[in-house]
Image 1 (tube, protein in one colour):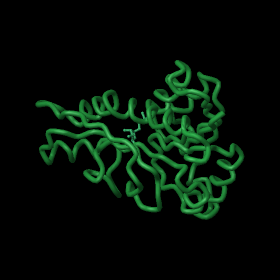
Image 2 (image 1 turned 180 degrees about the horizontal axis):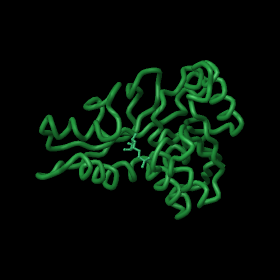
Image 3 (image 1 turned 90 degrees about the vertical axis):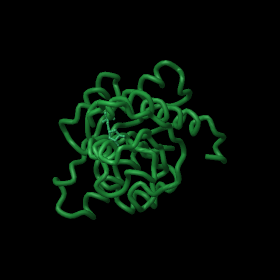
Image 4 (image 1 turned 135 degrees about the horizontal axis):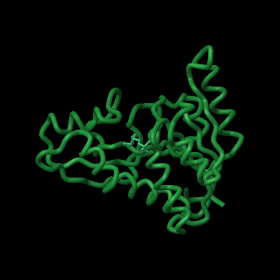
Length: 200
Ligand code: GRF
């Protein structure tokens, strides 16, 4: 069984797309061992519980220092020995000790075509606001491996989405999720889970 840990901070629609595609059999031989949330009231936790998936909450502000938080996060992840860690709308910078311990085993979904509209400060609606401000006609989403930088790791998959006249950041965000994010994130997990062990 391919074991994944999904890390979230918000609504959890990307988490839902993974759950749905495991339950439908599109993603095979894969289980979500745990959902780790950076916020105790994230709706993503309710989605997990609705499907009988274990949740853990690690709020950074509950720790005295960044190092304490990093150590606790690493301990929590290690408990599940995941084959893959999926950042699905996780809004906390992943500590370096976690990135080092799980090199090439952490993926992130970003709501633009990297290298456009990415890096520090580009998250959530901000990305779509900037796409519209710049007058782009095409945007999209990217799944990439996570390295020590912000949105700098190797790109795995991208999908383009058209910007339409009259789009607001909210409308565009929804279209990017529906047409790109909810497709390419489960697709990536399916492909990684399907690879032979020595080739992941
Ligand atoms: C998504 O747009 C994702 O690309 C970004 O944060 C948002 C999370 O949405 N990193 P959700 O919590 O999966 O609904």
